[in-house]
Length: 197
Image (tube, rainbow, N blue to C red; front, side, top):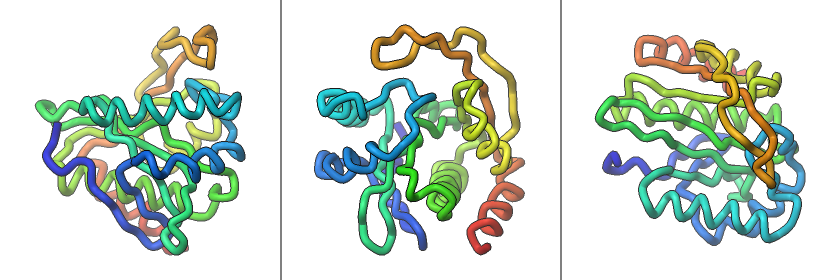
């Protein structure tokens, strides 16, 4: 694990801070207005499933396998969603950004753009990453358009990559994207330009 990887990142639209138990109630509320169609689980299906999602995220944080974050509105501190660093490979200077979700009211507000800018800037400029990956359900056109708009480079589809859904029976092909350190200046300028607009 990188020293200092779980840190608070503050922007103008959002704050991305390490996930804590006390974020739970606000995130449970935010999760009710989210499209979970392509996520590995749907925590709206019951409080027990949301609690399991939160407990799992906090457990993975404690073990050092993932670094989950709460995405909060910068002005109010209201939880809008969550994201995380995972697939941590400090020895190869790489990681993944994933498990990203935002309540629908935060869509098209700049929240996702700024959260990605904050996480990518920290990964490349503070952690010294040379590669940041993303993966999404190959059927998730909205997510794939968002990744292409960063722009992250599409690297292919991993067929029959995982079983997802609350019962773990839906087969998922995963589309992989990546940004490398050579791409970062262009990606950063693009994200800053989009945020300014």
